[in-house]
Image 1: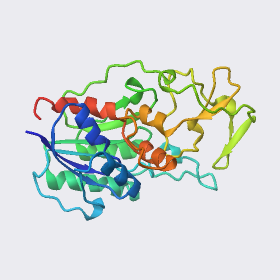
Image 2: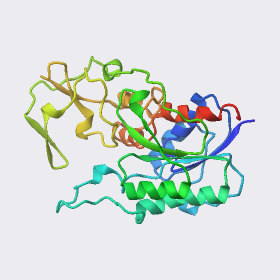
Image 3: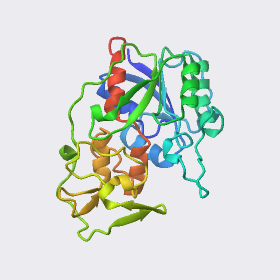
Length: 288
């Protein structure tokens, strides 16, 4: 018997990839997502997924699904929004209110109305403790913090709230940034002392090199400073390709290749590190 899955804020269907990788047969996978590019990538890889559109318009049937998964957008909660206002004020939400929490409550609505046997909710480690505590209070389980660095070449701490049993930390695979980076690439030889992105001066010497143990956390913006790095002797600069970012998120090669480079970065950055999710889903193998 295969599993029936409801995915809220599905993105590019990393949950489906993870279920396959965990060896769990999927009988039904219904996705709620509104980003057209993400839906395009999902359909490119899994035409059998049933896409339903906006989660706010969703109608659920009790016990229709075995597993509810999702990670509501962290856009309003992430620490990356600190001090980004023009007047230097903090823009991110720090209390369980506002649009970010409204999105999360759509996941909660699905959980209450469907009453699945299992659930998995994911969000950014950097969200404010007030919000984190309220999520824990509502879902009734403590978050498990897992760093994607254990299964990939990027540092990426995330919180996972789930009732899937016996979840442990993944075994460290020892994957290094230098293992996945393509050394044959275009380099900028004449480095400025800094470069500017989003109005911010970033010193070149703050970048990591191709010999670094891990890359920065994958971002959604192709031009973000974290996507730039230096060669071994720090004399030349380059930036990640979408193919390399797929590897950092442990996605199958070419998974997002149906889209343009910039849209690929956004889709991948908004997605899950597949091998972390597959590790969590492995707790379901005995049942499905």
